[in-house]
Image (cartoon, rainbow, N blue to C red; front, side, top):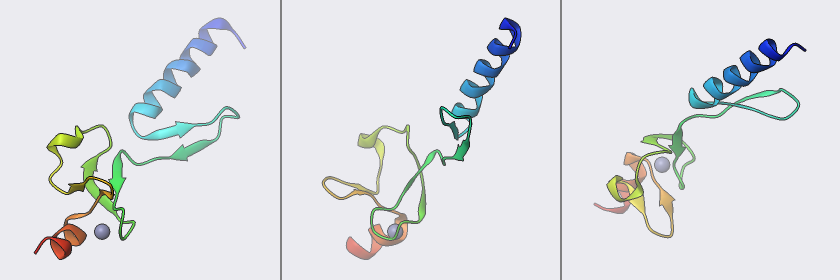
Length: 76
Ligand SMILES: [Zn+2]
């Protein structure tokens, strides 16, 4: 592989990881959502993984991230 091509591939990998894909060492692509999943029901929440925990309204210490539905069921 030429150096230029190798650089392009590396840049592409970095870009993919930013846009929510993970590429493993053997070049397999795993889609990984940038959003947290609910600790109770396992559904995807609207909270980004890179968001600050202190700002998350539906995050519970010890339990983790909850979706709005589970959160409202618990805290009603
Ligand atoms: Zn839930």
